[in-house]
Length: 407
Image (cartoon, rainbow, N blue to C red; front, side, top):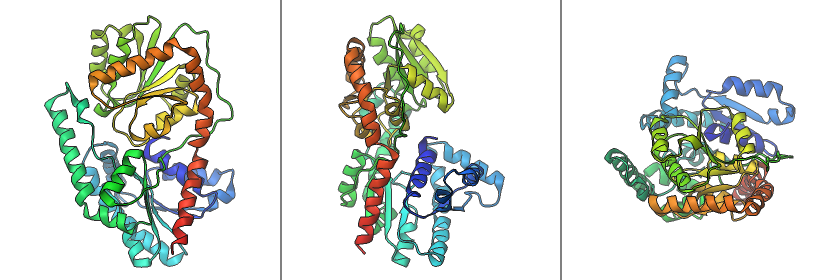
């Protein structure tokens, strides 16, 4: 899985190769996890993972399901009310674990948002056990230039969110206590590293929160196909800027270009936009598809067009690199750390009009230069290794060792 679930799972299963982990988690995926543990090929690995379940609604299954729906609705502020309460009970469980087992490090791993640091820092204060926080996403603001042409409601929402974010970074009491207690606060992106230094006065190591799955072989693309296929993946959230992707695509006047759009949400306004731009016949709307179908689309596409301006580290960009698919994206957030000059093109933040020109020029450049496209694709394996879960795990282990050496 991608998103926070996949991130947390990959971290603990990779760290378990080197550490014994006592994992407190919510329990939505308890059945799947327990099935995996019972069937794990590596029994020693499974034995090093000890799970403690803390359902967000207690023993009331219906309440759990209702709260989980709220938590899945990103942007719903009610989420933080329940999440804060959950973190308090999680700290109580952690304290009991620490009283029964020799715990070397307390690690607040997931979720990556800085706004809710949990309470493991308080357990650290009580027990003297070192505390690590992160990777966390602590970007200072949403780039307001990209709200141009949107409704007053959208502009007000992001302006308000920016104000709240800066206030919480500067004055959030628990946020600062957690940061001060932490041996390390880990930045999930270059933007976050800058904010952590600015607001917490901490030199944050950069470890993107998600990694690449290594593939022994990568399916060869069909070089003789008649179309040049561009893939866009994401929800129709405003920050993903599907409208920018459509505008940029429309500027490239090539008959055999195709844009494949994958993701959920209300697609009707974007389909109307495609008609207005005269590209409806070049767009294929896949909607929500399975993970394996996304992999298949990556294997038959020529590049990934990623237009989001507000992310942690997008899992889809990691998957693109894992599938040797060159990437065009903004030079911001986690994608900026992952996409280097060997695997794709990064567009500077500016404004909607300039960015549409920049993205369209990048598309046209790769369309006209198959050798450059192949160069990017061939370099993806090297980058995949650098961004692999094993590489990330070793970075985290190094921080663990450094933390213990400070005691």
